[in-house]
Image (cartoon, rainbow, N blue to C red; front, side):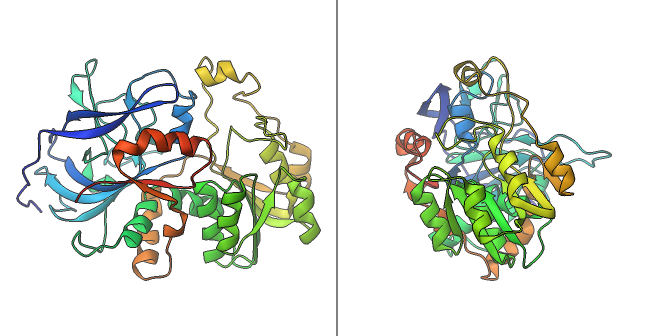
Length: 396
C-alpha cells in the first residue's frame, strides 16, 4: 500500500555511545530509504533499556561509537515501494530484535538493535550515524528511524498520532521489548494460572515479569531485589517484595511457601549481585533452583552474554562465560528450564491487543519522561538505579 511520502528535514539529534559510561547527543543526517522494503518512522517516544547499560558499562566489544537503543514508537513517514503492511501515517512499534523478513527454513540467531552490532542493517534506535567503514546510514531511533524489512519489523497500532495519550503510548512502547520479555519469562517457566512465582530482579524487565504473572492469574508473586524504590513499585501492583540485602531471599520466600514456589524467573543475568552487592553470576540460578518446588519450572531472560577482553571483563574478573549450576537439586526436583533471547514479534501482537482492550496498562513503570538533550544525565541516573524506566519524548 504505497502512500505519499512526507518530506523530511536534513538533520536530527541522535544519541550515541562514544566510550565507557559516555553518551553524547549529536546532530546527524536523517536516514533515507535504501531498499524497496524499508520504511522511515518518525519517533515520538523511545526508551532507555537495562540492556543499554550492558554496553554503557563496557560489557560489549569495543566498537565505539555506536548508537544505543532498541525501544521506540512513532508513525510512518516514508515507505519503499515493496512495503505492503504499513502506510504513511500508521502508528507503529519497532521491536528490539531485527528480523530479515525472509522465510526461515531453520531457526536463526536474533540480532538486536543497539547492541553494538555494526552493520548496514542494524544499529541503535535512539539516533543514527554515518560510520565511514560501512559508507551507509545505519538504522536508527531518535527523531527518525529507518527500519529494514518493514513488513516484518513494524507492529501497526490501533491508534492515530492525533488521538493517542501519553499513558497509552507508554504502554504500547513496552510491547516492543520489556513487556514481551517479561511475559515470555513467565511463559518459559511453564506458568499456569494459580501458580506462585518468584521473580528475581525488579528492574524494568523484572517488573514486567511481575506484572505479567499477576495479569495471568498468579496466586502470589515474590519480587526479589535490593533497590527499595523498585520493590515499592512491585508492591504497588500486588507483588510481595523481597529484599535480598536484608536476609536470604530463599529463606524469606520459603517462610511463606514451605513447599517452594511453582515458578521462578531470572530477569537479571550475568550481573547478579549477592547480599554484599558484589557480582556473583551463579547466585540467581542457585536461588531459583532452591526456592522452586518439585516439578516446577524456571525461565531465564536476564542477559548472560560474556565477551572476554572487554573493559567490564577486565575490571570484574569474577565474571565468566560459565556459571556454577546446582545440577543435583535441579535433577532431584525434576525441574525444567528455558532461557535465551526473547523475540517480541512472536508475542507483541497479543500484548498490543491486551492494551487496546483495556486489560493491560504498563505505564506505571515510567519514572521519567525526558528530552533527548537530557539523556546523558539520565543514563547516569539509570545506571545508579535512581530511575526505574526512562523514556525520551520527541516532538510530533
